[in-house]
Image 1: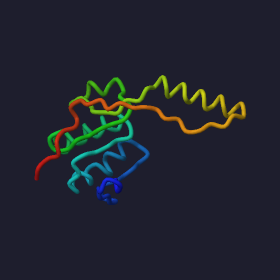
Image 2: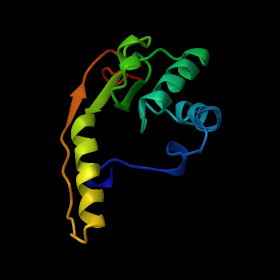
Image 3: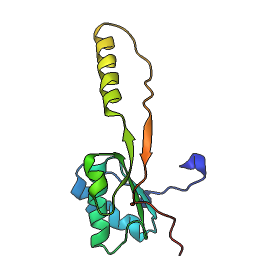
Length: 130
């Protein structure tokens, strides 16, 4: 974020082990501090964030945008449908197998680059105007 001139602070970042703890502990604080977009590391976390935002009276995407990562099948059926990053699971599996097989056979490996795709649905929108 710093590379793009965006400010960060402890008030707008958070991580917890359990989904419910993450939503209860961090999401209200983010929203109270004026956060307009939330990026979640997995779609199951986004679904919990969508529900919590609605319970707190925030409209997605009018008040806050939320994006996930995985493009799980449920992502198209949440309310609103989830904007997410799709990764090619077949290529991910092949790369994992190749890496493990190489290491087991004493062959060093380098970095794998797996391509992703932005799947735009309805959980993201324009930045709200204050």
